[in-house]
Image (cartoon, rainbow, N blue to C red; front, side):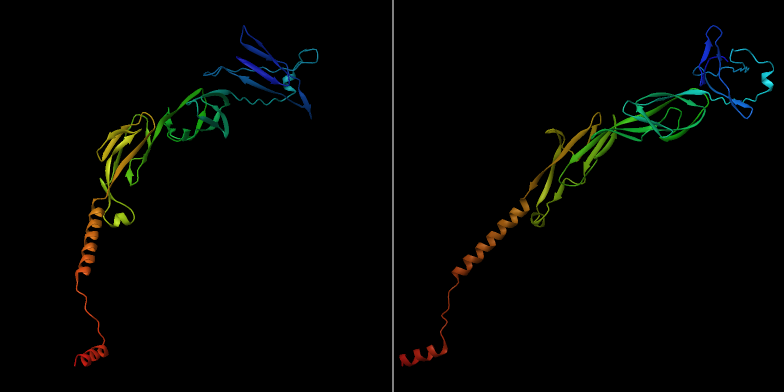
Length: 285
């Protein structure tokens, strides 16, 4: 047989000049039949022509005449093929339910169907991750079945994503995950927002000042954008406008002061009881 071979329990000897291998294998006798097993290994990417001649020999390696008519042999041939999976280094490939080492792998498998799985999301850190985008042969599912009947090389494509976090005391839009190089747009719903609590009931407002990152102004517009070449954390700055509550407070103080002063200037009436009034008349008469 062309290529190389191995047998159990004995080794095979390969003739390198002719690329043939010869195996001497003891036959396990059982009820007049004999069995032996061997493995064939062919070169990657190519199936070799296979020819096998089996003969029986005695302990001195003497060929037994007409031995092929006395025994029946069953030969099962399993050709091992190479499956190459190319992935980014942090990704772990799973073959037939078994996790492989991280990164690209090259594995020898028997012909037939095999399950290949890669993770859809690989978290690199709190603000960076990889998202599965598809396979080099057009398959878009991260969990797939491959039919291995020849050397196969597949590449799993991943996209880097970065997070955009936004700090704001009022509702804003735009935070989330973005593909590497994308433009992230963020905005506030309104440039003014009512304060919470009693100050909001009195008309206190929050006025939008601008978008900042690391204390540097990005834009003072209500809507802004930033290129996601890395993760970003931005803040929406607001300042408190107390003009209306202050005006109301001043008006209330003025009104209260006026009422107090008016009460002091009003003349007081004598509250004389009727008996006291009659007594006063008798004295005067």
